[in-house]
Length: 615
Ligand code: F6R
Image (cartoon, rainbow, N blue to C red):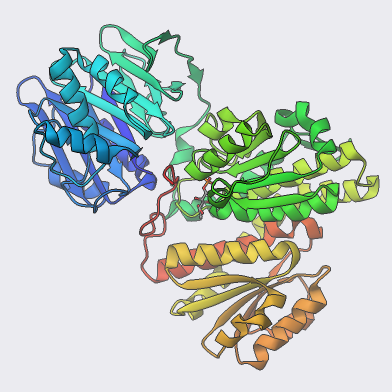
């Protein structure tokens, strides 16, 4: 939710920041802006509604020179996406510029006070209070910018990652964070980078410092990096070496990040279980939760909290955990859990699932669980993310950076980790026999090749997409652990192609949605061989009897559904527990091709942003 990039060093800041904003554009893309400081022409601020490319075109003929600057790509919360509301925001005297990611919750009262002191607000944003507040403190208390920032943040309620640039000190950037991520990159030539995540930084340096909540970082050409708490205690920066490679965040010849990420799944699933699974020795283990295995095995209840696609992965996890470990699992929308006074105590284990590790609702749910004494664990993709740092323990999904806004490889990696976790606990508990255990892990090892085999069917899937690209509605049906996959399939179609779609447990269809079915309605059905196969076959018949169009995902060689369906996509057979890792792939591809054919912006769908760091 909003991307921040800032630079100070010997190079020209504008092109570095512009490139960084393009890398962060998945975080927000309704407007963008960059302010640079130049010894001769002063503080130049360029802002444009729309994508970063609009800003690039607009600034092409302008003076953008300067070796210090700050930039922002916005996902609007307060105020429309327009040039005025775009960041950076500038102080009334034109001396300071500020960018902000997050929400200032008490901005109304702060604004009232500032207006009474004569400040005139130009934008409708909550952010503008920050720049005037800092300015006000600076003027009245006669302190330097860094100190004014510190004092100001002590009266702010809400979430923020900010960077401030001030004309009175062209050698310094001041940054701070609380609940919104911020990373400092330490360049090789005494230059510094600040960004919402490491993607704009890694082509320059692998040395980074992840800022903690309520920390202020001052990066200075002469004094280097210093970190203080907002109570003014100096801290030693903890420098980490990132392994992230530049290729991982580039499209690598694919037309879209989403397509690249779909095709990366054979590798990302393998990366996820590498070193955690050994078929020969019959062993599974997750280093990150090693110390919690006994606690997990003894748990009376496990609660999973997540949002969106990660919530769908949690639902798959529920089936796996309950079946394999016989521990009751509750799956909660993090946004609901946090506001409904849930009954949790120190015996509970709460597992948060989050690709970004920054989702505000998931963070808040975890904090709530922690405050009630529960053990909190995390399954995150982004290394060093906020959730991965506040949890007692957890496992990374190792899917690599996911840049397409619609989540694909993160989902399959989350399901993979949940499978490994369920197997680990089941082993510890003795709730699984050796034969079943061996059968599952043997099949797990074959999943990457089977995913690759499905990807080879892309052409056929594209042809099916072409037939249904103009649909206005779609239904996705599945039973058992295929039900969450149906939900995920519907979400993918909705979010990138803007076709209304619903996922349903196949048997529930006759309790309502069946009324929608006519010859215009595509119905995607997961009809793979397994426990519910015969039941799903009956559900397909119900759809066909109402002239609905059935697109079935079937197990290779299944003649029965092949006959009944209007179209079918065959997937290799696997253990029933693992089918979600395969059945989700055709749905991802269908959504992708439909969106492309409809001319939608696949990687940056309207109104969405990759990580939702606001409530
Ligand atoms: C859908 C999608 C979102 C996210 C959700 C949670 O494709 O990407 O629904 O799954 O915003 O995000 P994370 O997993 O980062 O917590």
